[in-house]
Amino acid sequence: MIVFGMLLQGLTLLVLPEFVGYYFQIGLMVLLGLGTALVYPTFLASIAAFTHPMQRAESIGTFRLWRDLGYAIGAIFSGILADQWGIEVSIYFIGILTILSSLIVQLRMKHY
Image 1 (cartoon, rainbow, N blue to C red):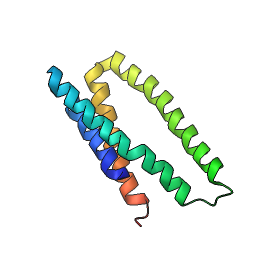
Image 2: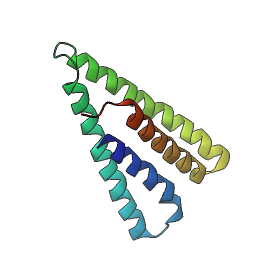
Image 3: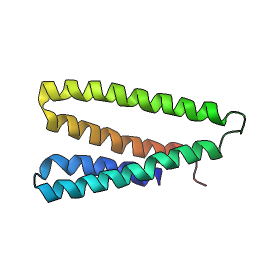
């Protein structure tokens, strides 16, 4: 679910600048939301399932710290990209980064 959700997010972001119609944009936002809905609860459940109960809160807190730090750094970096080369380049870059992240998850996470 994590890999598929991240892949869905990335692919949606890659086609987002190409579709300018209102209803296309709504459909793409639904797909983006579905990808996100697949990823984050699954990440949290995976952390909870594979950590010792005494370390669960710390592990989830660490995950949330890195996730939120990624949001902040991503916002700054994508803003710099958008200022330098335009919003489309910024969206494409984040889409590619998300797809690469899904491939890393596919390779690194154990499949149970």
